[in-house]
Image (spheres, rainbow, N blue to C red):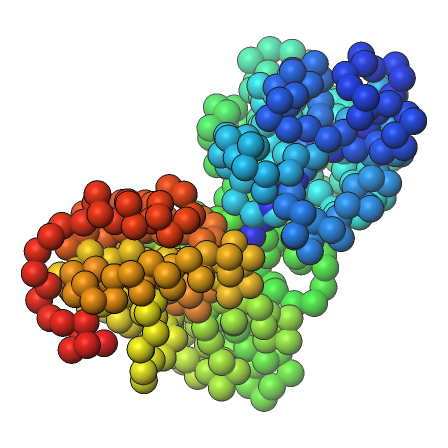
Length: 495
């Protein structure tokens, strides 16, 4: 849950001109955000061409911070022509869990834009304060592409601090134009799209082209790039590759934050250099790093340069310390990590070559192995996962948890009781792993929320536990799933 987001269902603004839906939508309630749940969600969403839904949890601090801004935005947007509806769903409520699953809610708050009666679903990727929400949703609910009729239009629309995509066409019809509009519909929550019949209006690029051509404007590297391939998949790939800087800058400038987010969303290998920008030798490191990035351009790797002053959260996520800076870390496309601490400028190119050649050992973040492990629920860390779980010969119930997770705290005493129940059974082990401090590193474990519980039988069969959260439920599951075979070692010998 490093990327955490919670289920905030759509933003609903209520207006008397809308079809009456429920008492909750009346003006008298003075609440402009529409409350949805499993009983009315489908019916209400199906009646709207455009509705925003927030999936939230009552205990979530970020949700509480968003609530007044969301309500203010809903009030303003209720007066839009036509009104824009904002709604919310309590995703923590058990009866709404199917909605959370359907919309792939991984954290709180999560906002979704639902179009065409819910047939098209997009992530909300706009601001979290009222004014920004209003501006973003007005654009999202309007035309998918803005016509540019003059140089003034182009200057106002494109600017120099954001990514903007403009199609140049001799006529606004035909196969190429339709492909462009299809692309815009698919990516409109990420980028602004425009179209023009005269390239002379545009601030950069060849002005004599008559189209069809797609020109992407960006505030970094070559500032613009063109594509004439109007296959939608090819256009999407063109946008994806063109909107990541050669080297993404991770500092305190908010202008760079969208590009940082995009960097971490990429499916490429992610190469990251974290350095103190004000330290001696930092400029030499940065210069050499950019040279190396240029060498690997177009080879399925993205590069990021982070100032440790701004990127402490990233260092913590990777389990790194300031004493290891300057440090390069690679997060591969299959989520494996590789590390070079206290790197010097002339280390960068050869180390990266060694990584590409498969000569660099994987880095695994792990808490220290506990000196004592005498509690009923045994502590597992990344460095002991293989021995205590997979090589133990035991039936293991393993909880992946986060220290701050309320549900994990509620489950903890129940697991203690289960562990006490099996304390004299050398064939069963109840264990827990802090997933915020340890790399899991096993493809069978899909930890997308907390707590996540798996059962690993003595013969190696791995099953996600999705049953009840009572002592009786868990014990019943273990008894039905366990393999009754003698363990290789006693619990005391192993722990």
